[in-house]
Every structure is written in structure tokens, then in C-alpha cells.
Image (cartoon, rainbow, N blue to C red; front, top):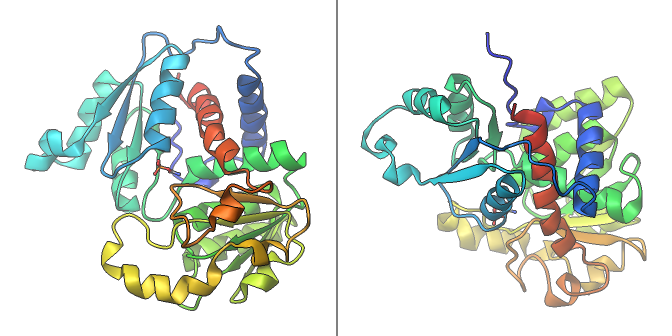
Length: 307
Ligand code: CP
């Protein structure tokens, strides 16, 4: 039986492993370990069904910096587009590659791919989860606030894949998370239930779902948002934007949070919709450090998973 480890959701790492990964990511960011090349002689596939700026480039650059080679695979240019199954593709690619990073529309496709691959599979975003983003978010909170457990995080807007992974990250690390979203735009109910059960069992973290963005932002250490219309949802854009228009992160909303609150956004941002220029470019914004931290957390993750 294969002993490979996948990273499809935050649950795939224990709390202790997350702590070690974040510590290692901070070490890698410091530049103290520049000659570290654990991926020499290894090739990693980057299999993306959707566009990407941060995930693709941070993984490709990180793999190179660790001494490895990345191979970008556009599914439309593979035999998958002509009917070869996900299972057979995963089996074959596992014979050439030491790991794969996937970005899929459906989380079920990522699970199917991982179940047939014999090398580690990393989820670089699916419709349900964005765990690599959550690792960078945790690192940014740790850097800026000096701790993670007990931090009050307000996620304001669409209860999407980013919110789902943040919920899981809160359960693993003890964040007190409040999600403010309109009715019908809540995070995934199964993910909420599992996280609440874990929080109760481990006596750490808290998850509140409410409607009022000001109530969520009140006394927050971290305010977080994401685009209102995710990739693949363009047909629902106008309805969603109308429902979410009171959930913008602007100067007024930021005033409800602590004075030293940081603002996070996983990017890309639609400036003027979910976040104003004033906040995005203002003194509380940590969004570009957060984007940079994708590189460091992913390098730590690759080191950990790829043998
Ligand atoms: N945050 C994020 O995943 O960005 P990309 O879609 O550009 O990869």
C-alpha cells in the first residue's frame, strides 16, 4: 500500500503539522536556507483546468527554487480532452512525476485523481476548497499578529471555497471565526458541521455565521474578503453582486475592527466591488504579503510531501 500523502483539504494536515509547516515557511522566507534543494531530479505536474496567477506561478517558482522541474499540463491538451479517464491519466502521470498540483472545477475530480495517483496530489483550488490559500493566510496572520490561536477573524462576503478552507483552518488552529454573508451564500454546511464538531471536541476555535458585516467586523483582528463571483459562476454574477453589495470592505466597515486589524484578500480583487482601493492600498492591508506567502508555504508543503 502506498504511503503517499495528499493535501486536498486542511484536514489532511494535523494541527502539529500545520504549526511545523508555518515555522518552516517563515524560515524559508528569511532566506537562511538558500541551498536547500530537496526536489533535485524530480518533476512536478501542474494540472490546471482554470486560470491562475498566484497558485501557478508560486508553485512553479517554488519547485524551481527547491531544485525541481515543473511541467504545466493544460487538460485540454492532454488525452483527457479526448476521453481518457481521470483514473488512467492519474496512474500514467504517477509513473513520470513525483507529485501533482491540481486546479479543478469539481472537488470530486481532485479526489478521484488523488485516489488513483500513486504520488502526492496537492489541491490548488477546487469548487469546495482552497487549502494552499489557507496555509498562506495562517502564515500572514502569524507574521503580523505573532499568534494564530485566539485571533478574531471576520470573513465578510461570499461563503465560497476560500471561506470553507478558512473554517477548517480555524478549527485546526483555534481561530475565532465569524462569517458574515447574505442568506443563500453561506459556506458549505457539511464543512461547517465538521469544523464545529472538531472545535467542540478539541475545545479550541469558534465559528459564528451571521448576516451583519459590521457585527462580524466588531473587534476583529483580521478582516478577510474574496471576490463575489468565483471562476465558473459568471452566469450568476448580477444576482450575486446585488445580494452582496452591503458586504464591501470599505473604510467605514474597517473602523468597526480593532485599530491594528489587518485586511486580507486572497486575490485577484475586483476593486470597487468587494473591497475599495482605500482599504486595499491602505495601512491595514496585508494582501501583498499574503500573496507572497503563497510561495513560502507551498515550498514548505512540497518539502514535506514530496519524497
Ligand atoms: N488566490 C489565488 O488562488 O490566486 P490565483 O487564482 O491567481 O491562483
